[in-house]
Image (cartoon, rainbow, N blue to C red; front, side, top):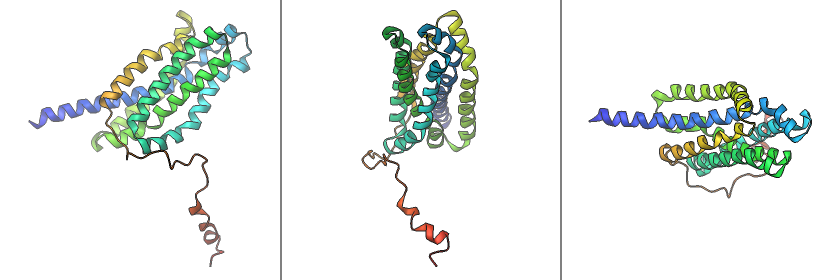
Length: 228
């Protein structure tokens, strides 16, 4: 009787690892997939290569700036909520990147859409390894973390190649549209397999200004030998 239950549990963990890996893969992929399309986008909007580089730079800047923030937020409100909301934002941002710039004939709209997309990317990237630690059994943690990190690196490496194929045979818009069906699948899968977590706290006490902790101030004289 225990073997089927164990098999079911392992199947659930496999789907959970798939969900986490898909998130890290897509976030990493979108960090590099757009690079190969920059000359095409530059020509489409008749802007310089320096200006169009913000399409890639804005994504990376927002990702780097938000990862730590959403890691803390996930500790308060739970991994599942942050993951699902993050993938929804990422998917909507991808759709906006592919549709709105041509519709409004504005590169600035593309850059703004990329920044919005990056917020979702930061949300799903921040909590991937944390979910492995929280939800995967000890005997599978190493394997799961290896899979997640391998797919993250694979996304970074495959980005230019996939982007080149899409730009060559379809258009630059498809480097963003390709995320939409994958994002919908990831949200449905995550809603099913990711357990609820969190302490039921709120963001009321969240340190929005990032003030230095008062704990360190009394320690400085002692560290310098002045408190003796």
